[in-house]
Structures are given as structure tokens and as C-alpha cells.
Length: 89
Image 1 (cartoon, rainbow, N blue to C red):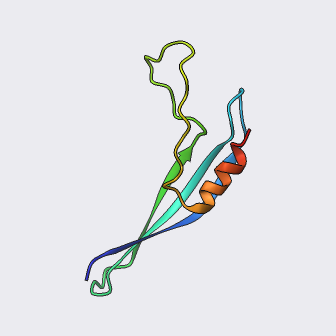
Image 2 (tube, one colour; image 1 turned 45 degrees about the vertical axis):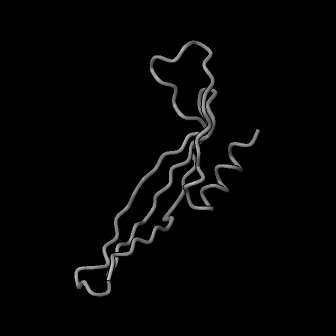
């Protein structure tokens, strides 16, 4: 049987805006790897992601360059909802 990976949100933390920036979100995901034929599984590991409203500009960006919004469509729906609520103008 194949190993399965189940991702769940352990927690989300919101950090307030500072120095004119938007609030940031920290998400902690639990990844559980399992295979019913393997006695050493399941194993759980964590992944921490820090999300900002906009992607950082490259170091060589020109003055006044447009910032690109962070794409959160690959995140859990709860995370998408939190980001949408925080980053709405």
C-alpha cells in the first residue's frame, strides 16, 4: 500500500500590522504520514508558513515597482478565509 499524507491546520496566529505593513499570518500545519502495512507509521511532522499580503520585492526592483499579492489558494480553506478577512481593503 502507498504512504498517505494528511495535512491539517494545527494553529494560525495573526501578527498585527507594523510600520505601515499589513498584518501577517503564521500557519502551523501537521503532516501525518501513514501506511497500514508499516509498523513504524504513522509519523507526524510540522510545517510552519509565514504569509504576508504581498510577495517581497526583489532586491533589484525599481523605485515604485508594483508588489504582487500573495497567492493563498493552495492553503487550507480556514487559512484562506483568515487572510481574506485580514487583507481586505
